Length: 212
Image (tube, rainbow, N blue to C red; front, side, top):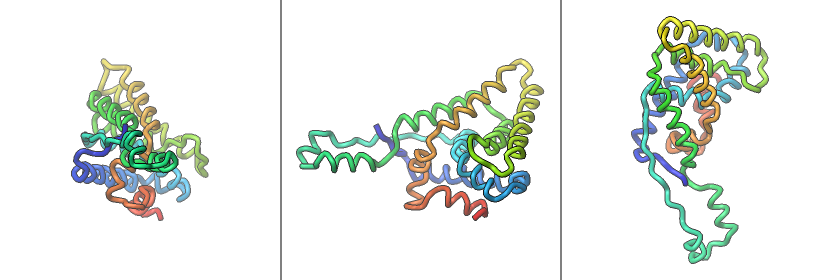
């Protein structure tokens, strides 16, 4: 099952606003610009998708979907489409897999249920942006330190503000880990393909960040 946005014009506009705010957050971080350009590019390319979904959560952007009806096998046969042609069509089917989009929507609702504050969102963005993952960075210890500082700031804030909820920190970190499973290609196709055309979102991001 594949889906597209029910109201693409309005939703794509809001998604673009989230992307611009995400870019502004990164651009205004002095610590980010202290690292080599190559490391900046790697971190952006690896972490833009979870940062974007987190931005959608912070801005409260929900969206409705419309399912695309694929032609049945019988119809393809009646239209004399060969199996090879059908496979080629399937490989470039419009829309996005419903399962991928539902995964993102479920995460958004979990963030909203936690009623995360602006301070917590700021810490979470730092944790995500400075996630080195399995990539090779020239200044890996520096990036790891920045992520640890963001985690420490989040833990201290939660400890001070949510005395009666000791599990909140672990629960939020678990959500952050789940963001890494979001398919970046699905996000690009669903929210930005009508805007980008044949361009890629990485190119747009690098241009908005003035890192090219």
